[in-house]
Length: 143
Ligand SMILES: [Zn+2]
Ligand SMILES: [Zn+2]
View 1 (cartoon, rainbow, N blue to C red):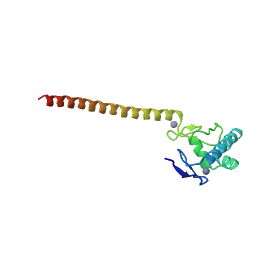
View 2: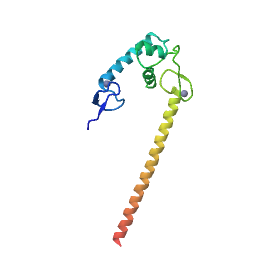
View 3: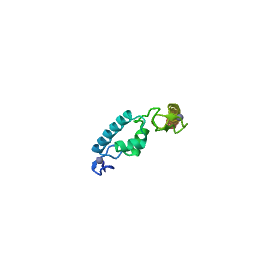
């Protein structure tokens, strides 16, 4: 089934697949803009968000989105301060520092493992019960 939506940027109807509700044309325009911004930051490592936003004609909201997506990196001398959401350490991009990211991944893996173990135990219990039912059923038929 096709999923037709209106592009959130230009309003054009397009075949929506996944992710942001943006048509191919707008997606490409944003990608071009991203390359322009990246180059601008390379050329102007001391530029702040507002300066980049004005120089490249791109919303600061979009810049922040790229930072969260870990697409834009900033050097130590950049006035753009990104801090880890968990411990407040200075980071170059994204939401968390490498240390907190590793902790979060570990926690996540632990939860998944616990869930898998619980599921396996439940399955084993069910199988044992089925076996028991089968046996008692056979006994019932014999008598
Ligand atoms: Zn569009
Ligand atoms: Zn951290």
